[in-house]
Amino acid sequence: MASLHTPMELIPVIGLETHVQLKTRSKLFCLCIAGGEGLPNAHTCPICLGHPGALPVLNKEALRFSIRLGLALNGTIATHSKFDRKHYVYPDLSKAYQISQFDMPVMEDGSLSLTDEKGETFSIRIERLHLEEDAGKNIHDASGVTYVDFSRCGTALCEIVTKPDFTNAAQAKQYLHEMRLIVRTLGVSDGDMERGHLRCDVNISLREKMPGGTLGPLMPKTEIKNINSFRAVERSIAFEIARQTALWNAGTPPVITTTRSWNEETGETDLRREKESLGDYRYFPEPDLPPLELSALVQTLQGTLPELPHVKRARFVKELGMKPLDAAALVERIDLAELVDATVHELENAPQEVQRKATSLLPTWILSKLLSVLDEEKKTLEKSELTPDRFADLLVGIAAQMITPAKGRDVLQRLVTRTDSYADAVIAVGAGITDSDALERTIDEILAENPKELERYKAGETKLLAFFLGQVMKKTEGNANAAESKTVLIGKLQNPM
Image 1 (cartoon, rainbow, N blue to C red):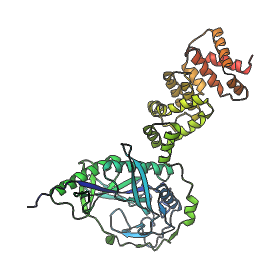
Image 2 (image 1 turned 90 degrees about the vertical axis):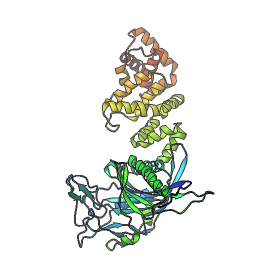
Image 3 (image 1 turned 60 degrees about the vertical axis):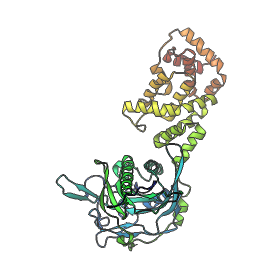
Image 4 (image 1 turned 180 degrees about the vertical axis):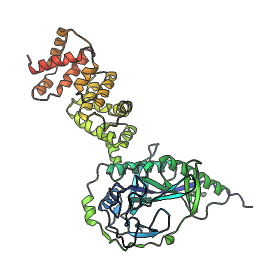
């Protein structure tokens, strides 16, 4: 009977292999439509099926995408690279080999800095990024018959392999979130895990922390294959740590490297096979593809990257005064981050104090009010009628207390669903004073109190009509008739006394 072995402390050692499906129209080595979506086996040809005599030709866009991603991950891009054949027999890979990269990948020695939920920064080293073709898809029916769809065969993938720098599931989830955001920002992939555009394998083992702080030997790892959701990543890591801890405590830690799959229904990992070694793959240089000389292409692509997510978050905090959590939430949605920048640009002509207040309203009015309206109207921001200039006018109106937040939300709803100008939207939701003489006196006072804005309007800056209309609403505490106010204002602005 084996004696129980109770280590003082077990340290998880976790690494990720992430597969990013590149957003190219055609596959990596042929002209078939990429992605594998649609009717099974609809997008195949002799090249991606590996028929004898069919010669692959490298997709240049896929190569450019892989280099851009490597640069974004702070890696060293190879000056010389090549493709290799990786041999194994799976039913969803008709060639019985995969064209991948072995010893000369596109990128090596990258890194990604992240911030955890406690606000503490940690860094993950990236060992390599290489290009390879995807396999097909097995489809299992209820009777136990397996069908194979080869449409996805040959789709371009970037495989990104980290060092074993993760210590918990939350870090792994954060890394994948950031990776998805990076590939979307670069435009190299949609990064949708639910559609298989971003998949990962988790490598995990435990090692004992000895008295004095030294670490015991690293035991053979377990690889969990093809995880396709953030939730599954967290759950599979948590389960595997518990499973391996139980083995350690029983005195039987893992002694061989194994491959397991994640079972979403049971919440457990299932043994599939012993993990292959490099010798099993029998790598050799791909004879049908020439070596790559990348120096000129790297020089062309350097300096062309967009602002990356971590830079944008820091800028929103530093320059716009946002809270880190608000900045993170806005940057997580590329369309919302673009709206922030475009709206800030439109606010540049507002008085400085109003501009500051309007800018401070951006997080709440986008993350709460705007998203709520879009949800009610069942619209995406892209499909809505909202434009940055009209959104900026609304924020100026609220910041200057020209309209109340409650009325502002009604205005926002009209700006989302109609092409009304801000002034017309205010009119549509306003009501009040009908005393024409009192209204004219109020407008005369406002024009006298704002001579600089009046001169700017007379010089052609007609957008200031919204400013003057807002001043009317402010001075009358929202009780002026907006339609009549607009008519009187236009008359006085075009024919000043």
